[in-house]
Image (cartoon, rainbow, N blue to C red):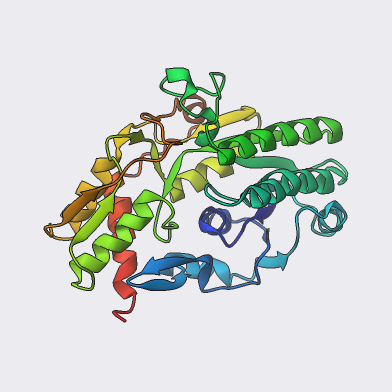
Amino acid sequence: MRVVVTGAQGLLGRHLTAALLDADAEAVLGLGRSPRADDRYTHDLEWLSGRVPAPLPDRLRPSAVDPRYAYERVDLRDAATVAEIAGRFRPDAVLHAASALRDDSWDDLIASNLHGTAGLMRGFGTAPGPPRMVLTSTGSIYGAALGAVPFAEDGPAEPIELYGASKRAAEDIARILAGESGARLAIGRIFNLIGPGLQDRHLPGRLASRVAAIARGLAPPELALGPLDATRDFVDVNDAARAMMALATAPDPPPIANVASGVETPAQRILDVLLEQAGGPSVQLTRLEGRRADIPRAVANVGRLRALGVVCDRPLEATLGEMLAYFGAFSSE
């Protein structure tokens, strides 16, 4: 296959690229807003008292320099440029992982999630026999799903913050424009991604950094955290990449599929596992108020994904162990 990956230098994009090359893709073209970097993610991470570049884990470094991989810096809102790329590269599939994230500004959410998706769909929609389009969406589009847990693809979708609303709108934009061009479209609603290099705007990434620093004696044994009784559906980024590949390659994928483990895990479990794997340091906890946009329970119905032959079952402990070890190479300064 010849595959385009947008957001190719982000957490999911890097793993998609590696998985595609491991599966003997003929060529992978990465698209993104940032300059090419073969040794790091595009984001920074909090470490000790500052921010540092997030290095690529060793396992992903070969794919970044594989001769079958190329990268181009592009504004996806520019449909004409995207159309030129489509005509030149002629992909079999496009995996759209570029996205503004939760807590980004409204302007960024609109620019990336709405205008970027529209430009991508219009640009690749001009290609003869348009490629399979696979949109990365999010479990946040469900909100609390009116209490209908586990969240099903055909169940209530009531986002409670602007990020989820923008991704829900992106799904509609992609569906409408795919109908106009005749492109085949599949949507993967990914739940709570975890893996080495996860941004610290997400609780598991922030906790991994802090616990690693505490375990090394580089930070005081103190944590200030909001409520940890909410449940989430955590999915290893490698499992998520396999699932998105299945949506790109299956002969007849569902139009929408939850990409998740199907396991409901309290946030407290993340902290407990990290502390246990760090050797059990004694930590003083200060409790903070929760966010208005937090929901008490979130877990996915994964029946459609399993019907594709994909099970996201990498143990939570294994992934959190890798996230903790990721910070082992960080400087003590």
